[in-house]
Length: 356
Image (tube, rainbow, N blue to C red):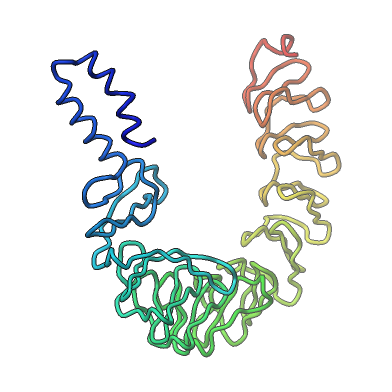
């Protein structure tokens, strides 16, 4: 709404209600509207101004939202020429975009000038990386003088010397930096170090590392789940199952932990949470207290039972009768059997006959 229209609505009210102070109230009202709407003499944005760049007669401003917060900040774009300033949307080869500020001499990331940037050749590489014919930048910071070889590599960028992540040098051995395995693998190596994404693999041998799956790898000494060696795993017989389970000829594993006592020959996975062998049942790799493998049954995503017991999230509901047990309020909340009602794991005494 224009100030003149809003003022036309409010002025009669002020004149009637505060006639002796009408002139003062009018001045205060106009000043407040100017602050909120961002119409001061410098063109500085106010509360109701949109996010982005704002060009005043002598200055350029940036209004931006604070990360993760419902508040905003306003900064002067120092060095920007308001007479020739514009914002441009740059697009990389994958269709991703970034919006930057330009005048006839400079490029701006947010309120920061990118020192030395060449306007004619300036381009968006990806993520928070940019380059021109001479340099490469992370946000507004120069990070490489090897612009002609500065390219994206998976979730990294690299030039002929270094690999970069989050604006810093991740590896100084770019010629030997490579993904280990297929395109969905999270393992990388150079001639000195192995990583699961950006976390080093302790003791891994770069020349012998192999990816078994997105989050499993093996070298000459260890099988790794993500960054952690699976202690005692036998490389020759190691087999990846599903839902972060694996086994070899000697044992069964959930992620990097050994499932104590599990029999690899009879082991089977029921769902992402539950597995069993001929003697025991397991919940995320931990033994399920008193469970009978032969009669184990899934009730829903929270409850399971066998012929004699009921469990909620892997914890035994003491005394619950599986034959008459049913859930009356989910998820994982109220339940009952023929005698009692339960609030999570706790018996609600005397309420079994009243639950419907």
